[in-house]
Image 1: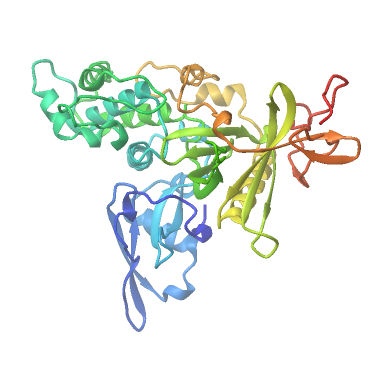
Image 2 (image 1 turned 135 degrees about the vertical axis):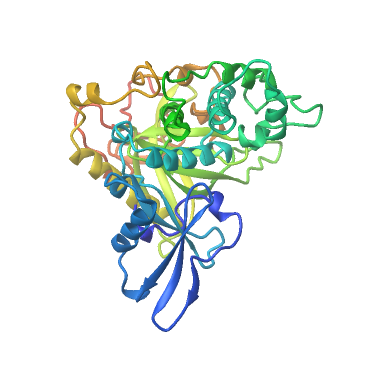
Length: 431
């Protein structure tokens, strides 16, 4: 994604303070600071900054870091400003870089940068994960930071001291002992220190690679990324927004709740920012969408998808309030166009893709954690306040809504399997 992205992404590690990417400006030159995912920065002395293109700046960063050509596609420049003040310039993963190409990367520095960014998203709970997956990912971080697991070494003490380096903050509860609980709403209690320790023990080593420490880490970077590939929102651009809460209580009070909207080449996910779980996940084949601008009404992204209302099939509309609604709509449209223009990988190409760690097989088409009961990556449509429609004659009605055409003008057309509006049945009750 280009630097024109603005503040599309949620604040990452480089956003912890209000930083400027232009440290000093002279008559002819400027010192530009480009932040990396590991919170380090690349200083660049740039001549004639106003006329510098994003491609030239991207190339300058790659030259300083000595990255191979694949970095041109794998990374992009992002302008990020959490409070809409002077933005920081960040070098991070390109939203339009396919996961299948990521698996073909061998350069250890490119893998490290991708690993650092993914790790930051997991620890910040931008990528919601089940406890089991948090432990598996945390174990790989233990391996990278602490070295191979050694029986009899004071490993548990090291884990206690750096717990928030391995697990998301909302899972690090120290109130009743150092590893008293590993809990998240909607999930069962974790095994705490022992669960992380057991996962650390199971991290596999690559034979013959320990002579070079940096090279030995590459399989673990790759294993971490491959585990993150199981998350349906991996590699997404994140946007801030709010949705209506379902009416509750005697007075039917609702209000709004903050959400983040993750958009990738694979679809759209709406994530509860407080509860750290997915509220809605849709592939592009499963939705229609549109947006309204402040000039028309208010800045809103609308998502339409299939559902049911008390057993009756309906079309559901989710209203997402966000100043970035138009940007989200444009990104959805571009991701669809890009996906349609890109041919799927051939069997030979897939077979050539390297596995994650030593001897491990490529990721399955369906991932086990998606079938876990109560998984944080599963949709929770019952927690959404939606507008339901079906068709009744030629009119559009709410709640028992009935219509023959989509509410939206924008709709994905991929032939078989594309989104289709609900059709009325003879047994449908009239309301």
